Image 1 (tube, one colour):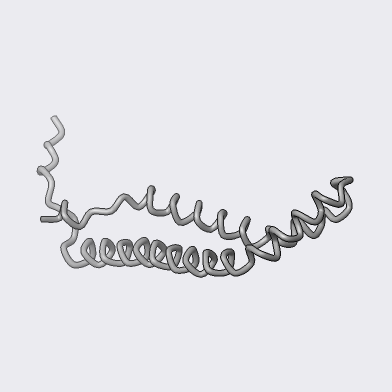
Image 2 (cartoon, one colour):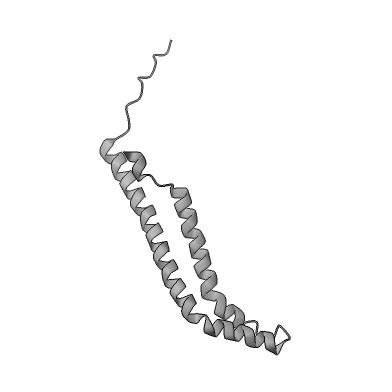
Length: 104
């Protein structure tokens, strides 16, 4: 039965960290493009970048909300699993091991 409720905390933590990095990159996208004004040397490229940032803001906002929710769920899973594991160890105590052998 315990195998049904197992979670790989290392993978869960890594996924949460990756999603946080993606969210941070997504959040800074608009300001990153604004910082590049005039650096491309092409008014057409500048115009296309401006349109992209402007037209994708709603989608980026929605994606940000979804990422925030996913990160919260993963972090909750990590914290909840750690709390359950700690409570089980405290309630059950260490498993009895073999008696130490007497020294000759």
